[in-house]
Image (cartoon, rainbow, N blue to C red; front, side):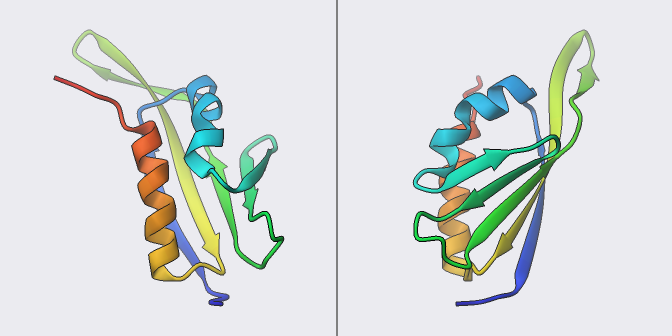
Length: 101
């Protein structure tokens, strides 16, 4: 198991309510706890593998007359290899992906 930390930054067009509402699906099958500015994610087997998500205060991005909620995330992976990180991110990103047209 790799003990290195790997960090990814994401700027999400989402408010905190939607972030937390979709979180169980986004991190399945992992378990998580939420604190004031951090989400701690661990595996069921209590292995050394974990993800810490640091999240910012909500802010608003204005584009013309539109206002879009924005939350910045930093995902810090510990004990994941590259394939495991990609698998985690694929599910995470698909969960928060929004349609457009």
